[in-house]
Image (cartoon, rainbow, N blue to C red; front, top):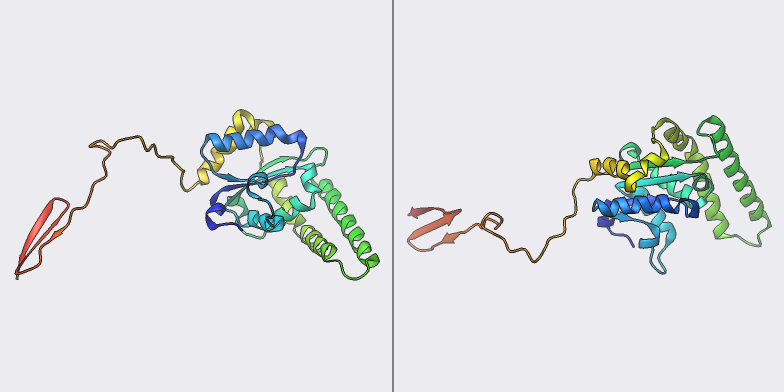
Length: 232
């Protein structure tokens, strides 16, 4: 079960693909180097956790890195994460896209190719439902995800076509320095680790508020090194 504090981390939505392992490492290294807390499935989905709930969690996160590749576009889990992300209206503020979808064209023909792929997935799943003995909750759930993907495709494609995502390799150079720079612009606060071995000096010692009240016929009140005597 996720916590509200975890939603403030930068989430990474991506497809497991060995050909992009170095690129993913560059992103993680950049986040670590800049003390930006992040959430990724391999780290945060624990034994017996619900994977679908984590995918929904990505959709509600404050900031999300969408690492969009050709294999991402044809992964039901990744594209379901996409539908959850696009449910919220502030995609422009929350999402940091990294796009390398070669050999798929980032234009109308590319959208047509992806739509055809998911329509075929829907037909195959629907046909399997007809041959099932009794109802299959798994296939029903898969069909629900596919329908959500098809419904969100136009908005998603418009986004990745019209947003300048920069040059893929350049964006990931020097531990994704350019990407980190953009993320830091939206980070409301930075996590700083305190060195418990540091002894406060006169300059760093916190200012303490001192308050003294004497009850009786005469009241004495002292705060911030100033005081007053109240005589009733």
